[in-house]
Amino acid sequence: MPDIGGLSLSVDRRAIDDTLAEFCATELDGVEPRVADAIRYSLLGGGKRLRAMLLTAAYEAVGGAADCRVLAAAVEVIHAYSLVHDDLPCMDDDDLRRGRPTTHRAFGVAVATRAGYLLVPVAAQVLAEAAAGLGLGAAGLGRLAATLFQAGGIEGMVGGQWLDLEAEGRLLDLSELMTVHRGKTGALIRAACTLGGLAGPADARTVEALGRFGEEIGLAFQIADDVLDATGTSAELGKTAGRDEALAKSTYVRVLGVEGARAEAERLAGRAVDHLVRAGVPSSSLGALAEYIVTRSS
Ligand code: GRG
Image (cartoon, rainbow, N blue to C red; front, side, top):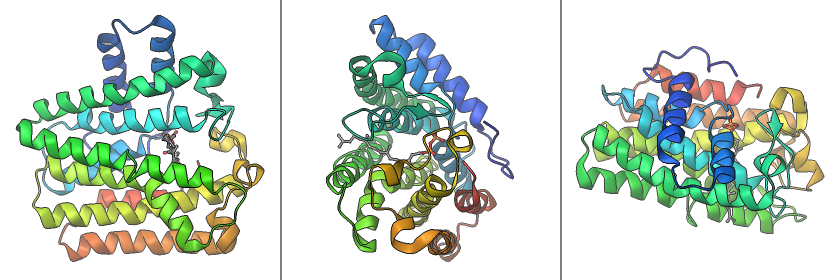
């Protein structure tokens, strides 16, 4: 998987992979070997590390100068857990992820389920280490934890996934789709941007602008994902193409068509950058990431 182009950030995809590998090497003592293998498989199996890049870009945009790779890795741990569980037979029941068998295909459903759950406390541990490393103190850690776990919970990712599963076989309109994906996909992307600002640490207005940026590009990301699912191949995507149609899911492509969905993603990416400009937080890296999100091919 190549790095996202056009970025000059202090943390890159390799740094995140190395950080997660170090964590796996030192922190999985006591975990049943097969579950530990599944955790390593899901954490170290590639991925664009987009959320980590967004966090880093947000952190640098507000003047953060320390090494934020551990904090960025914490978001990727929650993301990895969500992918493992999303692929399970009781959810999207998928066979392919990041160009290889999904975790439950490689390790079985019981092991993959346990590995996914265990990743949540792993994320909490990584987050605590990150806050200590960045000298943020107990109050700072509290703000980071509230942001990450609220985004990962019923008000965010879990809630959105729930609505998405319940909606299978029923056609959602645009506003219902936005509610689903603001939670399911958008909440963690928004949180990544907010976390970068909080770690800065930036003032409340700046953190809010980063959050709004994240919310718009979170939706743009999902729209682009729907377009890729409808137009890409499994080899290009590293996951099963055409899955939305097979599951009769409501998607932006269904509601807006491919070209309409592309245009909507572009519009949201533009709005995202406007939030930053208005708040006086110019960032070429965040701009490049917004552009990447709507033009990516995998
Ligand atoms: C208990 C109801 C319930 C839910 C559990 C499974 C889950 C929580 C939530 C699902 C969240 C999810 C998987 C959303 C999809 C987001 C998405 C489009 C992911 C793909 O992200 P990429 O392309 O992946 O950044 P890589 O592989 O590059 O990291």
